[in-house]
Each structure stands twice: as C-alpha cells, then as structure tokens.
Length: 139
Image (cartoon, rainbow, N blue to C red; front, side):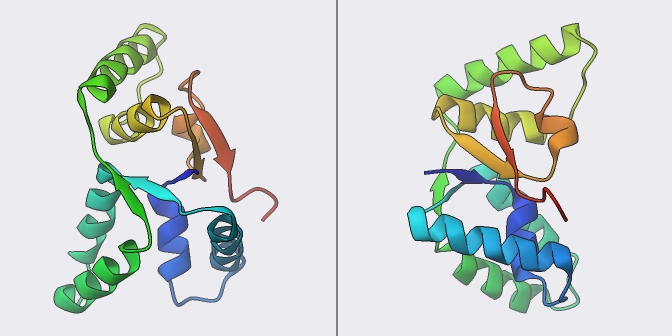
C-alpha cells in the first residue's frame, strides 16, 4: 500500500481538463488497481481546509467526505510524534526548514515504513528517510 499526498487527490477532483489533472487521474487509477491507498489525518485536514475556500462550503464538504471514503485514513500516534521530533531537529540542524504539516505527514509515512506519492518534491525530498514517488514526473 502507499500514501497519497493532498496534491494528487486535489488533481483527481478538479473538473479542469489539464495534463496535470489527467495525470493525477491516471496515476490514481493505477494505484487503486493494486491496493487501497492511504492518506494521513493531516492530509484529511488539508483537504477539508480547501473546502472552506469554496463558494459552496456544504457541497464541497459533502463531495470531499464521499470521495475520502475510498481511502484508509491513518492517524498520528506516539511513535509518529517521536519521528516528527527527529525529522524536525535533523532538518533544522541542516538548515532545511519545511512546514510542520509536511513533517507530520512524513512522520506517519515513515512510521508505517511506506512511500508517499506527491509532487511536493521540494519539501519531501529534504527528509532523507522518506521514500517519495513524484507522481507528476514527465508532465
């Protein structure tokens, strides 16, 4: 199984017909053929944050709730909190500051010895122990 970052889910939900959104849908289809993908509780929060920017919040939240039922949502635990602390300290000591939300997401993925599909290579590639797949390659 794999974890998905918020960007690929957003790409599959957008109505816009673009190379990026089409690639997100193609990658998502392939992932679902192999297994049920996971998202972290922090991706869940990010995705719902986006619904509050909508002109129709209630409708956006219904769509998001229904869509996210397809995914296993993995919660944060004590093991992940120690991983978060380790990653944060390592990044700061090396002068590689990234957002806490990305570190929280990474700590869950690492704690589950898994991989994350994302286009946010700029941040996630700074975490040496994180296995990352850039789903947006070759667009």
